[in-house]
Image (cartoon, rainbow, N blue to C red; front, side):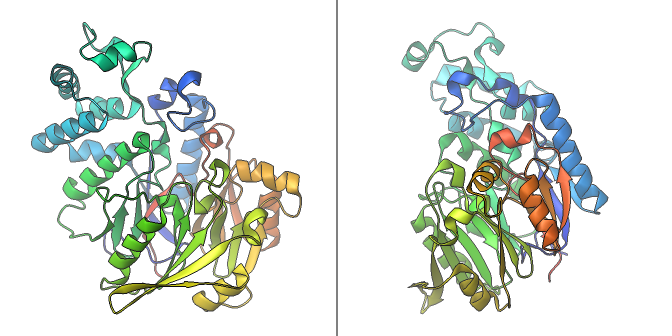
Length: 405
């Protein structure tokens, strides 16, 4: 099987990419949470224990688990690649002063490969740089800020920097600078890691494109149809560019369904309000069920053709996915209190590991019970700390290989 093969949301999961939370979470500070896109500070020890349970559930189901940090370590075995990624990483961290740039480069390149990767992810405190002094005007203006390079606490949500689609990937331009650095890691892994470098993997989008597109907004509904959220993090123009690239390529995809969802943090990505759990079953946040607007994008004469859909969501899904009796399982059920609480804790954000079999957070017990009543097998993982990052099991995983349905 090819190194990338994802033609559905629910095909049996065979290989997945994770990032085990690390010291980057220890570098979160209350004054700078908004800058780093967090609402709270997870307790690292418990977050790691919860994440290890997540990985064990996957391995117990015969899923091969890869880690971003391990792939990066293997990628930088090539000395030239290591030098280049370090330089690119420093530049993307906003370091332009030549003397400061050289100092940070020297510091990082003197680290063993394992610690180099950990340090790039965890961030660099000013106290770690010997004889740190102000080198430029920004240092004087930002004198109280403790970091030379920011931590990357969102990296354990591996779903967003890129998306695997068919036998290719969409490498993303993230909405915020703090997360855009994560896509640099993806670029180097797929360009230089020995498992991927010679595979001629197509790219359906590139991080150098102008408009933001994030992986949590991309759902592979079947081998022909891709759902993409028009969200707080994904720009509609990016969806058109992506559609032109993938619909015009040699594959089976022929339609994009664009879901216009509310533009706020609790509905951050499409997969925070809508995921596929079986051939004809989906989780959904009740607040969007009646208000969501869908657009169908197809390619005709090398131009994107857009149709606005005017029907119930279940009817639209039934039509384009060619399935009967579509069921929408409401997060939190019919209670506005339960649905709001469990939506905040990613009750709709399930990871399907096979048709009708999903991984979910323990704290969303109302939604979990509803899934069971609908015949969905649930693997429940602890979630007191992981959930503080505002992402669920789907957010924390990037499938690399699924069996075709």
